[in-house]
Amino acid sequence: MKEKTGYQFSVSINEGIIEIVITGEAIKKDVDLLHTEIIDLLKVKDAKAALCDISALKGRFDEFAEAFFRVRTIPNDLKRLPSAVVDVSDNKAFQSFYETTSHNVGLLVKWFTDIETARAWLKSKI
Image (tube, rainbow, N blue to C red; front, side, top):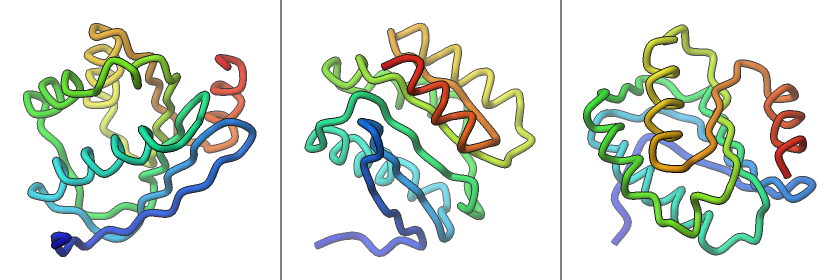
């Protein structure tokens, strides 16, 4: 049985980029489940890059240590996907940390505030 969460997501593929838009509200207990759901989506879609738009997601937060270990659970076959996160957050310290810790395990992840800039960057990496 699927857990009840306060968030929803939509998925599309645009020019080889899987785009996941997450809306609603997430609380701390939702973060691991959301991470697993995104990993599962990426496994079944034939995409060359991934874009995750969390700019409309409310009430979310993540801790540095949890993000550090969560990034290390990403399967090796998905590490080949250049990935962009779109967010309106002003939390530059977390964004910088996430990009760095992702890079340290072989992921190419970059944070953006503009979805078109994120798409252009991903297209340049495909």
